[in-house]
Structure formats: C-alpha cells, structure tokens
Length: 217
Image (spheres, rainbow, N blue to C red):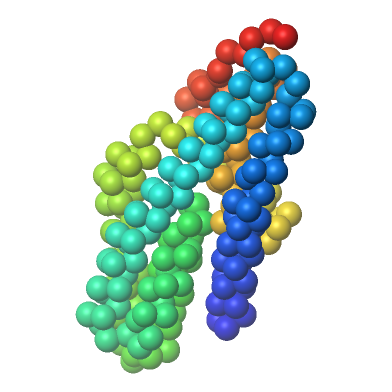
C-alpha cells in the first residue's frame, strides 16, 4: 500500500513538473511557431489549433477536478460515517485517482474498502464504503459529468481504454493521469491534415471530430 501511495505522489509531482515546464516555455514556443510557420496564414492556423488544444485540456482538467471533488466528498462522508481511520489520507488519494479515466474511481473505492476489512471485524463497513462510492460514481458519471463535459471530450470509450493502456505502458502511473489529455492533443492534431483525418475520426466518439479548414499556402 505504501508503494502505491508513493507511486501516486511521484506521478502527481512529475505531472506538476511537466506542466510547469510547459507554462514556463510558452513564450519560447510562440517564437518557435513563428519561425517554423513562415507565412502568416499558416502561423494563424497553427496558433488556432494550439489554442483549441489548450482550451480542451483546460476544460478536461476542470471537469475532472470538479467531479472529483463531488466524488471525494461522498467518499469522505461514508468513511466518516463508518468510522474509518485516516479519512483525510484516503480522501486525498481517492481524489487524485479520479483523474485516471475508467479505473481510477474503482481502484479508489477498493483501497479504503480493503483497509476497512482490516480495521473492522464486520464486513459491512467495507461494503458500505465500496457501495456508496459506486453509487456516487454512477450519479456523477450519468448526470453531472455529461452536462459539464458537453462536447469537449469527444473520445470513444474504447479509445480511452486503449489510450490508458498505451500511456501507462510507456510512462507508468504518470501516463495513466495524462492518457486523456495526450489523446485529446493527438486527435486535434490529426484532425488538421487530410491524410490523418480518418485517425481523428476513429479516435472520436461520434466519428465527427472538429476539422478546421486550413488555407492552402
């Protein structure tokens, strides 16, 4: 369990470092885009794509954070109700795990439930923790998340699972946290070129990712 916690903490720290370097290098990146693009039309097209990618990722992170807070509050409430030890610790870990698509909430509900089996002689506290979190996840996933998400994360569920597997294999736990943002970025880039539009369509949920028309230069 300690190794898992250390791994999550390391992954979060690494992600913060990644984003820190990205934010710090924004001005340098703008200069590189100006040098690479050449013409004003191409420069405008590239900047438009980058701004859309940044906006989609910001929206994704915001939605994940808000829904993660809802789920973490529900988890904290049930853990307090059953008298589980170290509620703050488990709540923070659970909140961080909500950023991992598909499996994060499940893992986050299993871990404190297993700990409850060790703390209590009865099976019911563990069942209550796991059950309440799953009910909260069902409500958030079907009522709150779709309304907040709108059309910004137009990724097929199968694509999400494959992306989670791929990026986790490549980068370990940090890859699990970055799977959806990286896939969003790739899908938007693929959508800009005629030869790779089909890849973006395959990655998207409805087969209609946003294709921006580019001026011929």
